[in-house]
Length: 138
Image (cartoon, rainbow, N blue to C red; front, side):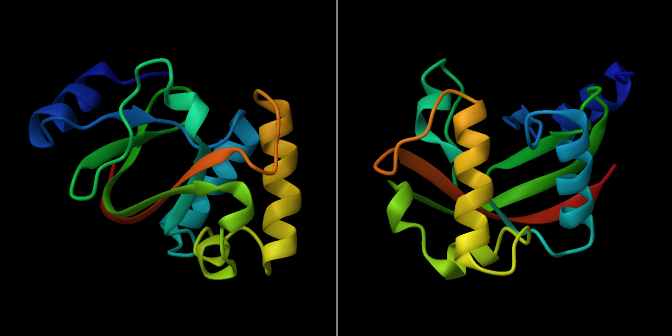
């Protein structure tokens, strides 16, 4: 269940912060939140097309609020680096920073499945890779 007071307090503390959820369902979201909390996940990749609805792209220096699937704040991250490139140009170092897979092949397999479920996959599709650091646990 959402916590409007907690979210309001975070928005006051981090003006301009966007809110987001990792993944495309409660199980994946929980798994990815755990990886960030454990320090294993310091990056994320999304489809550039997903920003066509008006959501702002990540910007280095901006803080954003990661939410549990039910809308409760989980933690605050600060964007460190953003790279927009074709899916095929994601490097192994970029993939491994996501903390989800042991190698680039596994990262590609999982992300092809994710993008296929969420609007379609094309090896030439533009993706947005973001490196971040967690700055506050909620």
